[in-house]
Image (cartoon, rainbow, N blue to C red):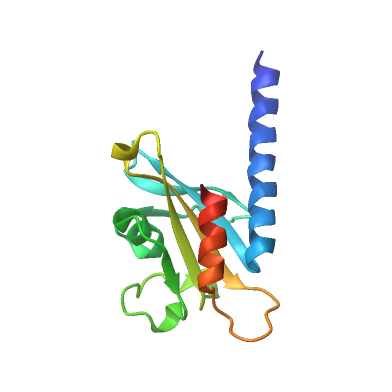
Length: 147
């Protein structure tokens, strides 16, 4: 029935939000966004977040840290986005300046020819003592979460 389908969609969205909230806590990130590749738009579009998204975020393959991570199939760990010449148009998130960002591509181990299907994006460290960037340990934890 339609009610069951709608309930499943709402529950799936809540599950994603809960998972991303936990992922954010593990890495000490203020914001965590999950992007999914949309074949129709040929872009990665934000489908879930640990915080309310007021803007629809999307990136083409190779565009910004999300698209770059997806295209290269590599983790993109940026210490200060404001100073990174590779991404001059990606310096804010939710109208706030961004320093630290970590993007992790998620590919299918079953269908590797499909390329990157998702990108997990961690934005800004929260309540940190010491450096305000993501560490190599955060990269490993992020890879585990995304697998």
